[in-house]
Image 1 (cartoon, rainbow, N blue to C red):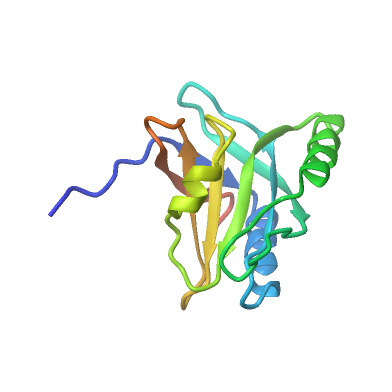
Image 2: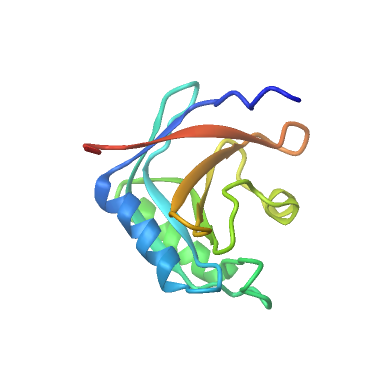
Amino acid sequence: MSDPPVCSGVIEFTRAAYDDVVFHAYSGDEEEVCGVLAGSHGTDGEASVVTRTHETENAAETPAVRYLIDAEEQFEVIEAVEDDGLDVVGFYHSHPAGPTRPSETDAARAAWPDHSYVICALDGYPFVGSWRWRGDETGFEPETVAVENAR
């Protein structure tokens, strides 16, 4: 049996941003939903902080098992994030049937090194996992998910 993966960092959500991800995932029912995470992008071991989410349309041909953010919509959202003085922290999508681990397709399509890819699984109790994309050789490393003022 292998050791569990060691978390490479922390991504912290405001309560509202975390809830936005979960509620958006539920609204997709059996289809994956997706969006962009905005806030403060942590580098060199610093935590990233998500203060806003931006829902996007899932443009995948098979949204029940894949997600795709249209390039034009992604550009517009990223421009809006930067206009607000925020950083792109990463991206989120749902896995209606679980798990919170990235799929092989998620890894093949990851294109933002050192950014977070958050997955909300709905296979039972909603659970949000996060993975930092380190590039093709290293792949995804798990991150600890924290929620501000979680009680």
